[in-house]
Each structure stands twice: as C-alpha cells, then as structure tokens.
Image 1 (cartoon, rainbow, N blue to C red):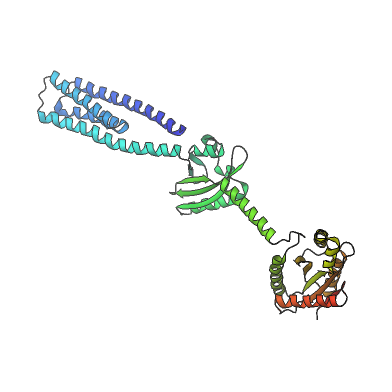
Image 2 (image 1 turned 90 degrees about the vertical axis):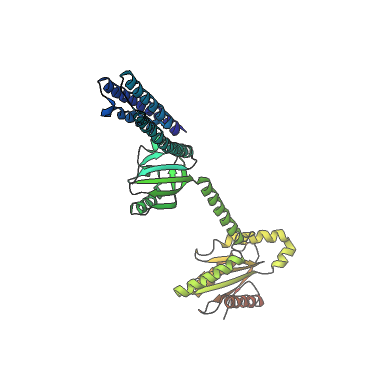
Length: 394
C-alpha cells in the first residue's frame, strides 16, 4: 500500500510539472501571435504541443479542456485583429486540436489505468513479488516481503540476495539461477530458506522468469507447510518404529525379524559370508508365570530385552519371536564365536531362569523358512535333551 501511495504522490507531482510546461508553451505560442503572425503562416497549429502534452499526461478531459483554451485564444486573436477566417479554417483547426486532446488523452488514460492497476496489484498482493538483476540483486520488492520476513524493501535491495539465503541452500539457488541465465525462461517450484529479521529461517517456494536482462520472481512463504510435513514425517517414523517394536521388551518384533532376515540373507549372498540363525526359548516359562504371576513374567521379559541388547555386536540382531521365544541373527560369525554369543545371551537371564537355544548355519541356498525350521528343530532337540543348553542343527 505504501508503494502505491508513493506512486500516487509522484504522479501528482508529474501532473503539476506537465501543466506548468504546457502553460509555458501556451504563453510562448500566444506571444508569437502578438509579434504579428497571421493564420496563413501556421503558427496556430503549434497549439497542438501543449494540448498533446497535457492529454498524454493527464487524460482526455484535461486534453479537451486545454484544446478549448487554445482554440478560444486563436478565435479571439483573429477577431481582435480583424483577420478573416472561413468556417472551414476554424473547423479545421478546431478538429485538429480537439481530436488530439481527446484521442491522445483517451489512449493515455487507458494505459495509465492499466499501469495504476498493475501498481496497485503489485503493492497489495499477498504473494511476494520481486524483480532482480541477473547478477543477484533485488531491484524491486512488494510489501509482502516485509510482512513475511520483516526486512524493509530498502534493506532487501541494499545487498545481494545471496546474503539472505540459508548456507545449505546457496549452491542449489545458484544452480537454479544458472538455468535462467543459460536461456531457460523459467524455474518453477524451487524451494530455499531466507533469513527473517527476527533471526528465524523461512521456507519460500519460488517461480522465476527471465527475459534475458532481468529476473521476475514470485514466492510463497511455505514455512508452516514445511513444519507440518516435518511433524508428519516424524509421526510416521514413530508409528513405523512402534509397528516394528515389541512393546514389552523393547526389542524388534516378529514383523521386523522377518524383514531383517530376508535383508541379511540378501547381504550374505552379495558378500558371500556366513550367517547363523538362533532360536531361543525360556525354559518352563509357563510354570514361572503360574508361580510368580503374569506381571512378574512380563517384568522378566522386559529385563531380558534390556540385557540382551548389550550382549551382541552392532551388526547382530535380536528380536522377540513370540511369547517367551526369541530369535537372533549373527552375520559373518564363525561357529565358535556364534556359540559364544549364544552362551552370553543364556547367561544374561536374571535369577534362576534358564533358556534353551537352537542354532542353524545357512547353507548358502536355503530359503528363510527352511533355515528357521532347522534352527527350531535344534531348539526342540535342546529341550528334549534336558533344557538349559544350546544345540546346533545338522
């Protein structure tokens, strides 16, 4: 709004200057008549100069008004000096003056109205509008910039716009600007962050156009949308993590185990390394629950989950397979190291509770179901052999 009002003030000053110049021309032409010029020498037609000037600057009404003044002065001059002038002569001069005042004024008024509307739209638009040089300096910005970022137009235009851009976004911004300089007429849906006057960073979504000499750009503040997107992604990540985590033990659940087993088998194929699968089951856990209660059983499972996470390598993977049953993946682990890892798990169980385990080594070809089946069979062999032990599948 301020920009539009400043433009309106400048327009009034320009109108006053135009009227002053027109009056000066009128006075000079009238003075020429006083020097004794006659209608035949055409001095009267010089009145088209002030008429045209006023019409172009101030519109057809003012143009016709000045035309009437000039025509009236011409008529008065001919009458007072007893100069004979035919009706055709008067008509010719009148038509010329009034046509110039009306036609030029109408055309100019339409152009000025369009310009005023453009200026008003530029000033009042909620979209951030700007023009810039191809070397990276704003030449004009509308008030929406100050509403969004806090910087005044003068502050934004006082230095290269790269100084307002987030350091991580400078290179992508230069790349987008280079596209415009290389001959492409537009870059749309480009995002970067701009510094606000309060020290925060605001995300802007740009559409920029170039005519080869100047860049025309409009931007939307999408900070709120980016914040919502980040919160949504964080929520989805938490939900996904919850969907793959056993609530009681904090370990990955059966779904996560199935996914990790297939990924680890694919890695074993690519890198040609060994893979051990372990199935572990708490011995006589039903009797523990019957004796101590299900709440105590849940507490025991939670303690086991906390302890077992600290007993394996970073590359290993342990999950709650279901009930009191657990499963572990030991990639690139020789048999003696795999057995040692399983024993660490069995010994890390609180109290007098024991655990049986079955270990199967992948043969390089079998599918996940067959591999787990062999480990499960080894587990039941350990149960039948008296529990509290580890058996390796044949």
